[in-house]
Amino acid sequence: MLRLSSLFHRALAVLLLLVFSFTGQAFALSVMDPFNLPAAMDGGTVKVGDGVAYADGPRHKLDVYAPEARGTSAPVVFFIYGGGWNRGERSDYQFVGRALAARGFVTVIADYRLVPEVTYPGFLEDSANALRWVQDNIASYGGDPTRLFLAGHSAGAYNAVMLAMDPSFLREYGVTMPVLGVAALSGPYDFYPFEYGEVQNAFGAAPNPQGTQPINLVTPETPPMYLATGTTDPIVRMQNTERFAQKLKDSGVWVTTRYYEGFGHMEPVIAMGAMWRWRMPVLDDMVAFFQMFGAFPSGVPYVAVAPDPPEQLPDSIAPMEQIVDQLNAMFQPIEN
Image 1 (cartoon, rainbow, N blue to C red):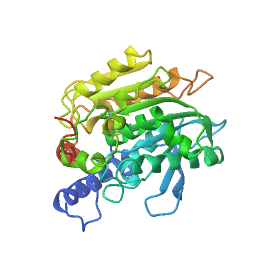
Image 2: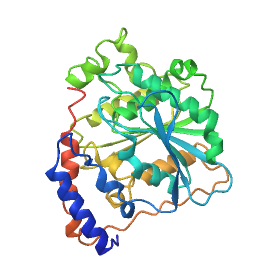
Image 3: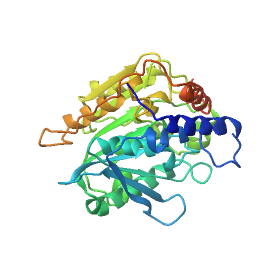
Image 4: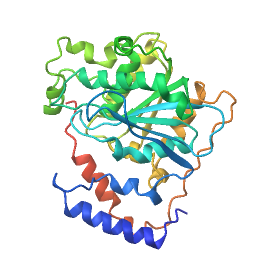
């Protein structure tokens, strides 16, 4: 059973009350904060890089998470968060960094510039720039740059897939590390024409809109893909993943698909964290995919242990369902 201390219950209850009471920009709490409480994240990990600059500017900083017990160099996951290309903070996804670090990965989460400061391809260029930092520096944090995987959620899944499929972005920044595989959660891969405000703001000025669509960039050299989505996602419908997966298969590219029954847009990434992991095996599935493509050459990856589902959700975390609903409501649809 998932066991939370009574002290944690009280602290979380207070935090949830504050999250629901103060939703304006002036209040510092994030709706993601409950997932990042120390008692809600995986142990056995350490934040080895905090706010490291990969370029000039306030949005050009990254965090690095690693297993606490480190021996030989570890595989690297570069995780890109989503937010409709116009919002998001690396600090909101500490639980993802800790979850992957607990499975033996050195994990990098970088901020990138957002709309309206930049539009396509500015946010992709920032992530490519951060990957150059990874190439040059990750060995000193315990990571092996020759075992690199990209991962992302929502708009971040798009960014990760594009960096793997369009070599011009990495080439521009001198990134030569091979991308062994990409894990993409709830991502949009085929959403032209641009019909909604957030998408129009991010991509409307692109000189070649068809070239912004991952489904149009598939080649036999595309790295292996793990594509996961909720079957009831109203933001990026399941059919988007299905179309992209079929195009990959038709081109001879390895693709693993997971469709999590009855879940929406935010649930797959939230379920990577310890608090919600019992809801779906997304972390186990992702780690198994990475292992298939060389994450742990010894064949002995860290074993992912999912908490047993609680017999009764503690009263103090019962509002978690409301938080997930609130998170899903923050997004506009990406496709019609």
